[in-house]
Amino acid sequence: MSLNLASLLHAAALPDSDSPRLDAELLLAHALNKPRSFLMTWPEHQPQPEQIERFQHLLQRRRAGEPVAYLLGRRGFWSLDLEVDSSTLIPRPDTERLVEVALERVVKHPARVLDLGTGTGAVALALAVERPAWEVTGCDSAAPAVALAERNRQRLGIGNATFVLSDWFAGLAQGKAFDLIVSNPPYIAENDPHLVEGDVRFEPATALVSGPDGLDDIRHIAQAAPDHLQPDGWLLLEHGWEQADAVRDLLAARGFAEVQSWQDLAGHQRISGGRWHG
Ligand code: GLN
Image (cartoon, rainbow, N blue to C red; front, side, top):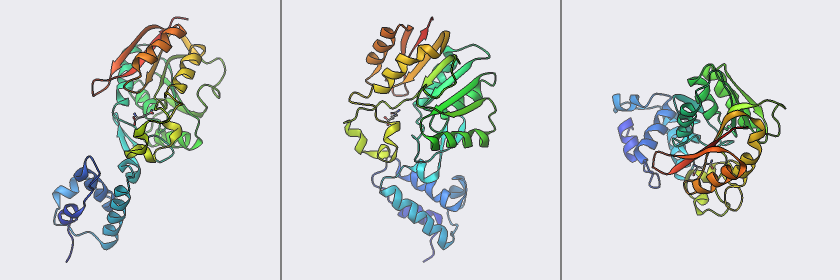
């Protein structure tokens, strides 16, 4: 029997996925090297045997839990199509809120912006593309992430972003102060049961986990950020959905002003920040 696209999709069982049909379509389109619309337009199309084999192999990996974004090597974030790989966190839709809040809060043009723990470069590149007059630096402590972010920058042709290897602030040029510091740092508690479920099993622990209460890195960033902020500069942090009170307390205790939180797409307080009056 010859297999066409409709029958291949029909037979592609992905029982543990939240979106089995969508996942199968994305993987089949990827195996064919075609856009997803091709599947709807040509349901009778009969792929080559090696394309079918590629699809079956992708399905197998997906059934074993590998995130779709890693299988495709791509993830959309903001207006950008980003290359992703297992050296970094997969960009999440909730993190687009961090971009929105930053764009609302900081009206300065030009401005100097720092994205701490940039990973794929998602937040830094989204801000750079929205504000061509901003000068955006993204840093990461993982060399493969810095290289990945730089590849994304080049492929997207974004000229006002730079990526550097730095463990938080430690490797940044001395004396450079920013108008805005953003970060989506690791914030999951070491023993959080979610770490053994779903996509996070395949993501690097260094991008996810931060000590017993998940707040080790946020504490470090809140403590160190004022030395790198211009007067009236903003620090904006993504955090876990139950951490907003703790993060606001940390920021207020460090002397930040205008400390507040913003909700994510599900209505949880997911971003908190404050302003450094200097
Ligand atoms: N939001 C991610 C999750 O809960 C975690 C991202 C992070 O630690 N920065 O899966």
